[in-house]
Length: 435
Image (cartoon, rainbow, N blue to C red; front, side, top):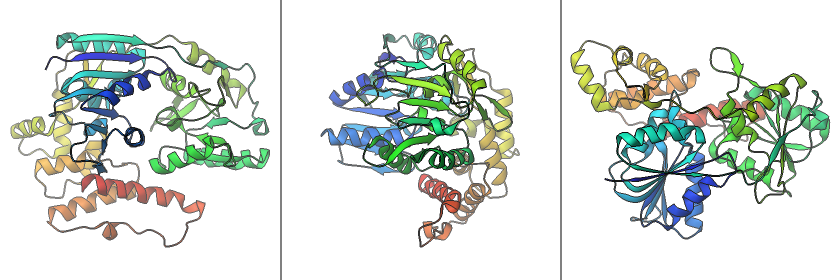
């Protein structure tokens, strides 16, 4: 199919995704591909509210509002590549260079069978997308957008004084413990109530917290959030306050990346909200210099797009190494794969850890691949035990209900039990994904 590729690029709050979605709304058939289940839900609801029939497709959930609905809102990994359509929208296209998930954006860009492909995201993706599309002999149109409302980096920090937090502020932290510590201290110092948003919260709960913060009558005037605030939530934020500029990367603490900092900072001040102009600052005085540098830094073009082998490719590879365990197969594929300069192989770290956990379970390669690529948090014992139990049950051809593997409290749990509830929710989503 000869496709037309249309890039909508610009900073946060520039209207780029809005323009692409307006085109999708008018299409006779099409798909939205987003980075988060939360975003897929949001587009699904918005389209149906407007009277445009739209189905939902995520790894955990499928909703059909009509058998032949013209549109589908999907997470990017679940995008159907074998269906011909008029318009496809791929959101956050800069994620094509993500070391873990970039393959899904590459797969969508190369494989979606749509007459028009609308790509939304940062300008850093433009040279790479153009280069890839040249190899396909496809036309690329670039639409650049400017931010609709300004934001400034303040010279004044909070000097570690949380009593200076005011209504409309969003304080950013990068761990669950820090988020709840800050919430408690801010409420004590100011008398203001805080909503919270972070990655481990279920998308539905995050959306409810965002709604409470956005509602001037709710009594929640401040938001304490992780970097989850940078993507997928529409928020009425007057001021972004970075409590720290360091984030744990799994091995050590390092500076948050410049693109990530820019995306979070861009949430301050939003078009058509109570705060037409935004402000960005830090809790600690020593951090403001890095924030100022990052916000004014030039755009760094992306150089490579992620790839990952399909199960069919791995089956062919496995024929050459019949005695190799699956984690070893992934390692050898990683060692031997040859890619040109425009692509890199996405990280197999999580998949290898899951593969090792399941090595003792007898499974055909195709089924093993499904379990190994499931959304498992390898850093938690509960999640790893869950995938092992589900794989074992499946290999024995037994039926497993949700009640068999999840036990929830009968009464409202205290805040101290929140971590256990989050873990249970992750395991429920894992069950739904594999169902």
